[in-house]
Image (cartoon, rainbow, N blue to C red; front, side, top):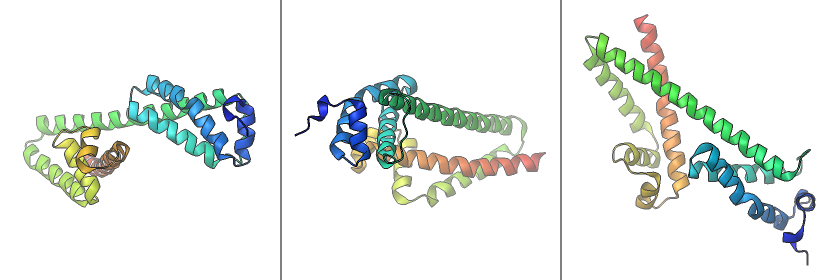
Length: 193
């Protein structure tokens, strides 16, 4: 019987390309913790770091037959995590810029517009429509997160769902809200100018 723990990465990669599940499992356990730690150092987000490692290994398994790795497997894994982390950071920067734009818009609305209360109420009404249109579980998670200030773990325990599922619901809800509010903000800017 083959002892996978004693196999080199290159030997495990060849076994993996042949569809060997045990070789994949060995590589996963061999690198999982170190890659999660590396992702955590870059992102500062433990849940996101674990998600990145999962994404990497899911992709690695599904593309096992077409993989062409020209560096060591370790370098390939770390490079992949670095790329996933860079994408995560870029997305966070975009979100921060969008929030900054909204903040600037609200500042302008309250300072310079005499009808600001009416406009703000209209915007809040639009936001409520977006929230009401969300799927039930997403809306429930979003409201617990934003109105009750619960963290992902607390929401998961309350609703009996995985913390990663809570995170995805919050991300999807915020994405939906940002898209709708971006469109509304665009039309408002067009109306003003």
